[in-house]
Amino acid sequence: MILPMLSIVFWKGQMPLNVTTIFNSATLLGTVVGQVTFGVLADRYGRKKMYGLELLIVIFATLALALSSRGTANSINIVGWLAFWRLLVGFGIGGDYPLSAVITAEFAPRKHRARMLAAVFFMQPVGQLIANIVAIVSTAAYHHYISHDADPLDCTGECLQTTDKIWRWVAGIGAIPPAIAVLFRLFIPESPRYMLEVEMDSGTAVHDSNRYYRRSSVGDVEELTVIDNAQTTEMHLANQPPHQPDLQHQNDEIREYRAHLTVPPEPAGFASSSTQGSSGEIKDSVTVVGTAATSLRRSASIHSNGSVLSAISSIPPDPASEATNSQPAERPRARKPTWKQYQTGFYKYFIEDGNWTDLAGTASTWLLLDFSFYFLGVNSSQIIANIWGTSDTATVYEILMQNGWRALITTSIGAMVGGAIIIPMLFFNLGPNTTTFMIPAEVFPTQFRATCHGISAASGKVGSILAQIFLAYTKFNHKGVTDEHSTWLGWVLVVFTVFMISGAAITHFWVPNPCNIRGSSRSLETLALGKAHRKRLEEAERLADVNGS
Image 1 (tube, helix red, strand yellow):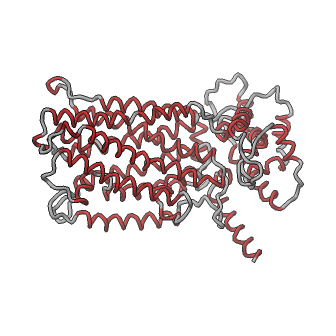
Image 2: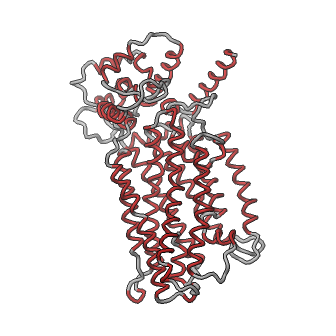
Image 3: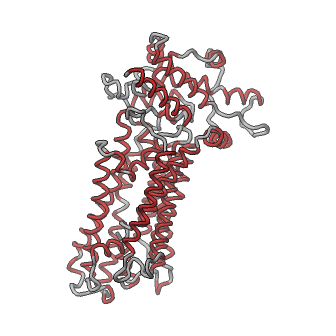
């Protein structure tokens, strides 16, 4: 929104193409780094800590951007500072992608998970809409201070000063929503799944779940139920009738999930702060299986009926874990995996177990989508002006108002309609911009969920950066996007179709389906077991349908 204003203030309405590319790419580059960085940090240090930190970065960088200046007698390089602050804003915004998605997925009931993720992503175009409205209102408020006949070349004195005020107001007001959001984020608990499966702290997970889900409906089997007492819940679940077919099927899933949660032993010679011997260290590290099983039994009612965790108590505990858990006072809580174990587990799950195609699918489809989306340039003021046919003789006020209204109609409202379509689950596959955000938050294990979402989202922004470069320097029939009588936009539509077809093919073969063959969402624990297990489930479901018919 502020680029046309910056162009008028600093470049007489003729911002150089390379400067435009630098500004746009700086934000996107910062977003790429932020998505991967905060994704990894959220998996290592917790969702809640990172969720507040990235917003503080956004607030600081936004205010700094609004206060940027050329200094006395142009002593400061305004391009460098504006690009730096936009990069830092992008870094903070990038962190919000994996964190918002992962936190929503881990707290949401399975029945409503897709809708809640779509609703979170729906807030992005709502924010864009509000930003456009702020720009329009700010411009209208200063209407009387902008000469009616001043064009960008003649905008001096009061006109120039007013335009400078407008862009600073628009940028500065952008710090208010994250400041409000920080206050709310102070009161959300850490994800119970993270506390359980990464921190190995079942007590905190149960406590937070009791507090957070205390108003959940117990009557609806698809809703999350209340955990009033961990011991009572465990005893209640343990009394379920054995040998039921459904429970037996879930038992198999839990045994696989136990194996999945096992932390790889530390490599020989790896330093440890423990005072025990090496065999004791490895024992404490590897016997996460028993701890996880006990912890999962206690938190079973976090999840909806039919979840993998709802049957944990019906599974006989492993002998090793039984012996270990019989003396809780003598055995400390299992240690959180080290960085080395995190890397080893990541390699095993994706490379050795063959789940790399899931990550490659979500990452490459996001890249192709964003490349096509930004290549089309619906967020570019130049493209919007080209589509609407802005006159070369428009005044400063007309340019600013037209840019605000047209961006509002072309980008914000269109994106909101697309998000609204996804929320009631109508025409689900027609919303790739939303589904690329949703699926990576569902299909990966808790230990790597934020990292994988960050990698997928960052791949999309890499596509956006490539699109900015193509947008700036690609010509068709020796004409660029802003040249008179250019057919550039038509050719872009043809090119973008090829990438969309490629994305559809990758989606079909590589992107995992978070739903069963009947269209119901699977539990996060089931999805975390990986591609091979997912395929076995699908085969069993198809066989059950055939036998049932």
